[in-house]
Length: 138
Image (cartoon, rainbow, N blue to C red; front, side, top):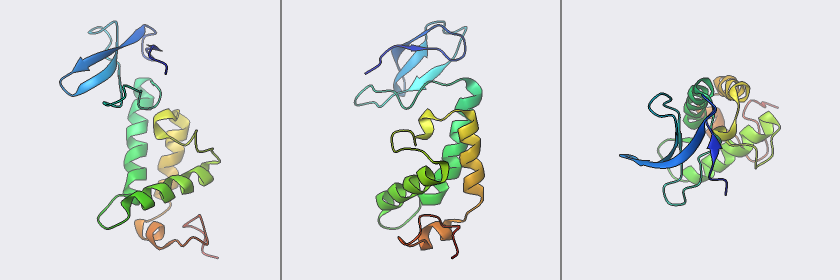
């Protein structure tokens, strides 16, 4: 597991730190550079790949748009999440390993946002296993 990263904002090293919300990778130039990157609290593995400020903001927007497609009340939320990621993978032409918003660049995040604007939650929930694309009305 890679435990050393280069700060995408200033180029300095990022190191594991512990804050009031848990572990994270932080820039060694703090407080001059405020860049930080989240980690899984139990494993210490990074959540995706470090990105510059613009890309971090776009990843948040992409997650917001995408998560609305599968989150919600009801049973089988895990199944809907898996299905939604499979659908996104197919729409973007990505492999399983590459379809993770935490690894996306700015252009890929913008693509997710646009793709998600095209459909409605009801389309995602109604879509049957016969079609992997809720926009496919054939």
